[in-house]
Image 1 (tube, rainbow, N blue to C red):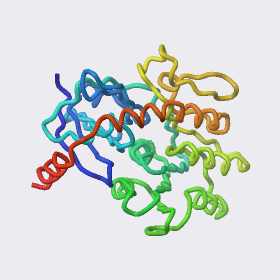
Image 2: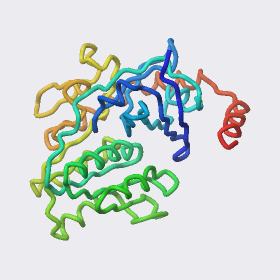
Image 3: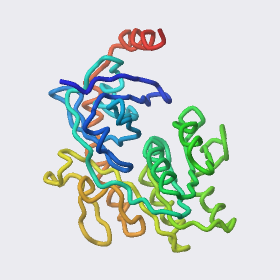
Image 4: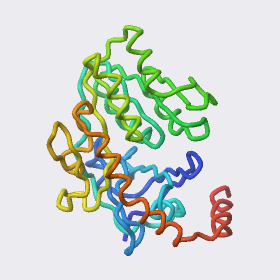
Length: 288
């Protein structure tokens, strides 16, 4: 079957990093692209960003936050386990400028997308500023990895438990007001966050790309589940995105579509009860 897990590491509560053997994706993937996987032959297909890749080892890194049945099943896996199937790289890579100042704004699990973007932007000779947001310090992920690459990192937490208290938009506002010449902003995170990042940059005419996260099924555009409206036109995020002009994106429609299947997802998660003793045993194995 392949797709063997070689590293499993908890980044934050209910958020795990996995390094997986996937040689063809490791060699071809680029920043901004994603994979679609199934944990088992009866599972649903879910998209996850290629957070990192190592062509020499033939591995890719994904980060999964437990929000539903499939991510719960995925995060229960450990080193040596295999993922049933994994397709990619999918989507269009991030458009990487050269010699510019780019601000990457991430929130929550979106910081897993910021990581490869910062790498690619720095390799192309750009000045890169990363604004990383989380609700609390313990939920902040990949700060060290991003700080090792970016020219500047600004951390915000909603409760002030680490970094600056407030939202990522507050830090972005201050950066703009400081006179920093910003050529472009790239944002990824909760839809509401991306919406307000775009509202922050629009009055200043700063081009802003938003990495959208609609429901995806087949990853080829045929099912139509990933429809988004950009500039008044229907676009398919899995093949035309996932990054689009944030100033032209209908975020309110995306929020509505993302909430459509929440009752079914809750019912599925309630039905799929995971034994707490099994969870505890796996946690001990990982610590050994």
